[in-house]
Image (cartoon, rainbow, N blue to C red; front, top):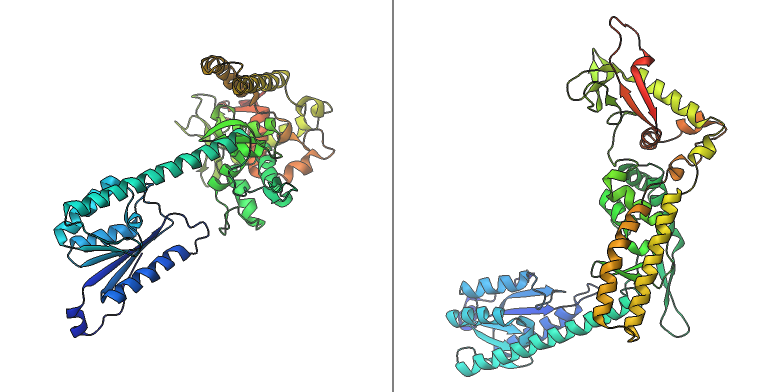
Length: 474
């Protein structure tokens, strides 16, 4: 950020060197800018004592020189130096200007070419016009670089240690709150209202609701967002419900490293199913699209196999083969037939037992296998920590078990239809429940229960022919 000060009289301007102040602080967690403001005051005071006219103040708040990120204030400072608009650069300390040797060399070249003086509140004048002054600047830069690298190593080691012990990164995560403990370490406890939002999203997705519908419902109910922005977005909903920490898993550098030291919001198997719905196209119960019709994109053409889409046929909404127009049928007739078949099937006496069974034996076995493999990996890690096995043995064990775990987890993510049909199959009033469902859930139910294929009708048929619709129950 750059701020310009009022210009003094012409006589004063002619007599005073032009000074540009640069202030930077690398970590401003609360965004108050207090650190750069203190630097600004000291730098302006130094300029005033020396009779320099401050023509601009460049600030970079909460931006590290070591990180390599673009510093807009520093970029503006360099432009003003190269344009000959500055006689003196004032900083609080030399390491506020740069901590990268490569960046320092560019700075030296710029100030030498422009004949600019460099002064800091803490270190005085840095004479870059002499070999000795440049040597001192480079030595100070290398020391600052070492301090930054050393600090970075310490931070990484602390974060790794926290991850290995299952502790969180320190910031409060949505869905949990921090409670004080007698030993002063604190612990994470479930925040009921926020955890309820995560469970609501998971339940809705597993019940066949589309991501778009879930997002719209959260906004309609004015549910506060995790970041405080006015409205939920699909990407925000998706990212929130897919967090590994929801299932009590600790992630470090993008990888799950073990169990977290907090109570999970979702059971591991339920979180795995949500992940399957959102990330595995081959196993999705419902796509996230905002389809406006019951069978659009679900029913198929019996001639060429293309999906059916809704189009106007002589002013009447109709399902039509999206590829070649092989078949076409009134939307109202086909929707009515499929709806009646679904209601009849879900209202049958055996529907509750047939469709609302819990997990399949295959999925139960896969979940158990994945748990066993994770336990074996944890045991190997403990043995390595205790010195019972060396690093090479740990690598061999991990290399053999990790692929098996990945395969078992994939099998455990098979989507169960129980949440989708919960409260619907075997209900006393299936029609009433069906009429109260959203369109996205109705579509998911149809896709789960049957395949719909529309064939050509008999020659000369003038009315809807149910026999031309092939229904295959899944």
